[in-house]
Image 1 (cartoon, one colour):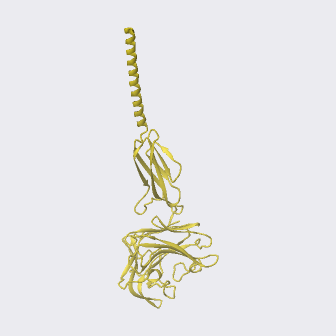
Image 2 (cartoon, helix red, strand yellow):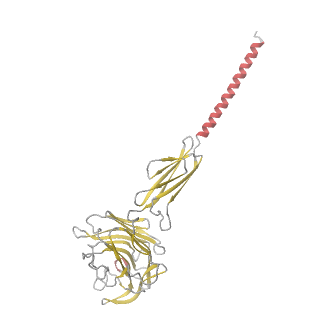
Image 3 (cartoon, helix red, strand yellow):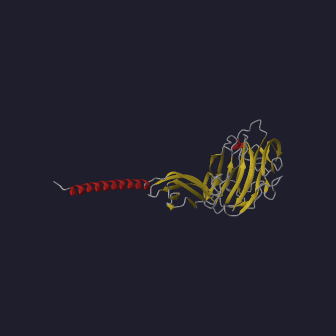
Length: 384
């Protein structure tokens, strides 16, 4: 028979075992709770990307190439950012700035990661278009007309080409005469208006049923960036154009004559920054025409892009031109890019032309009820 002392000891031992069992359970529960908290995954990641200098006319930014990224996620203690497949940059900050260096307007991906204290993460990727100006775009403004005056186009900057080079008429089957009349070209309310009108006009012994205006810039340039902000005519049969010709063309009636030479067309080279047909007012054309400098053979390349609001909103039609490439855009949309190789005559001075032709190759059929149509230009700028 065991003594009472032994029974007391046995009961105490059982009590201690129960106590330690309870403590172990509490410890396990506590560890599980801590582990659950440590393994929390961030949620609700919000990313806001701001492109510096954006506006209605510069949706891809002001040319600085700079973006600012802000991020926030619940239960996140740090973030990481990756720009255009570059290295992952970690930081405790919710914001990060980055400058893209590639020139022109390009598409980039931006990845953002949010991390919890335990290293669990969620991520989000966005794609944006960013404009980075080139050396030409950050250079000086060498020729411009903002049209902040009234009356005839500034005669120190513009020449009216009115003599038809094709035996008193114009090439391409065009149905108009160009005049220097204030009815056909004038400045008012901050814009230049080039107006095609249905009216008979005789010039060079030929009578036409329409008049319009064709302006030559009195400034010739080699390389640079050209920007023309314009709203195009909506009427069928109109053929508006913003373009350049090599100043060595020596075309009858042009401003420069033989000052730069007399090679004729297409040896001089032609750059059509914007043309629009008379039958499709929802797109514009960019084209290059030239004579091969080695063989003299005529060549041309180009493309078109949809511009559904071309006739009721202003858009920027631009040319970026250097010794390697020629790039034509509408706003920030690439229309066509041409390699500037040695067999092309795009290393010589060009001048700018603004006009509306009627009918012809790209104007097409003119409606019988046509009365008038206007090409409206907000500004012309050449950087070099």
